[in-house]
Image (cartoon, rainbow, N blue to C red):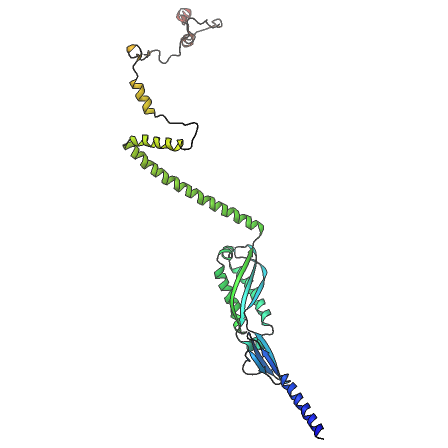
Length: 312
């Protein structure tokens, strides 16, 4: 009898221990536990460590409190300046209220993903292409505010939203590359023109200095010769100043001890064409059939006939 009672007690204690062990839960450091007792949320959230619940009556649901990285699928949209783009993004969020996440939203990750897709499409339609390419920080902030507004009511905090990539059509890429090349060409021409302007001003100052001091030109010539000779060239070309030629011309004595007299020209014959030499054979001319013109005869080296008697 005593043995039977002892066996029954041991069985009851074993069942009680198993019942208590079924109510033990382990909550990790990055998790929080929400307890439902007969379907009703219990006050308070179970922290990390051992959590005891009433078996059968309680149910513990764990919520991850880590930062979740969620990629947003790429979306095709048309910008405000009518350019078709392909944009994708990434969202970083975390749970701040486990009770609201479990009670208010059926699947908070899916809800945030759908809100992110709609917000991304909206931000694409409100922005220009230049903003998507160069002003992403402001767009990221606007996209974060659009997603965070409904997420706050779900117990989720949006830490950061980033637009990862903006894919453009090939035709738009070629147009932008041509625009960039034209801009670089414009800048290079402006820089070259400014350099030439500054160089011309310095050259003008140098020319004024050399005009005031003629020896500076010779020193510059010697310096140029030294620079060219340093290259060990086999041929050396030196400029010869015209002033030196004129000086030599004036210094050279005339031939036969006298200065050659300049040729004089008869003003009466200055405008007439050159006469043919008498030693040259006379050209064959057609027989005269009418009046002769003195200018034509003089041009051929002959004397015009007396046409007055013929007329008489």
